[in-house]
Length: 118
Image 1 (tube, rainbow, N blue to C red):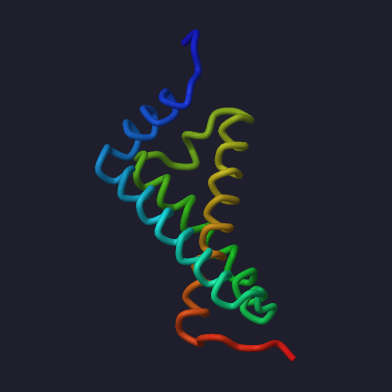
Image 2 (cartoon, helix red, strand yellow):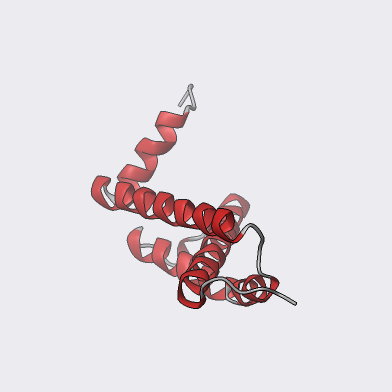
């Protein structure tokens, strides 16, 4: 592979997850991001209580992300070959953790509504 571009990355993800599932995941991520921006604009500040609970949920999101990728790629931990595989796995864990924290914050904001931290 002589050329590495953004389209190459998209093609790899479409091959790994399937075209429909990949674009569904992109749409869900975009919707959660839009909801997060809406909540921040609506509340005009971050609630530290909601933020703390969202941070406490991060390990769950990381584990779920790793499990999902292992399930979709039909791989297991025995298939991890070298350091780059571990780095990719840590990246998946980190992305899942951050994404799940944002989701938890948004869900709390919609369920509880506006709250002031006094």
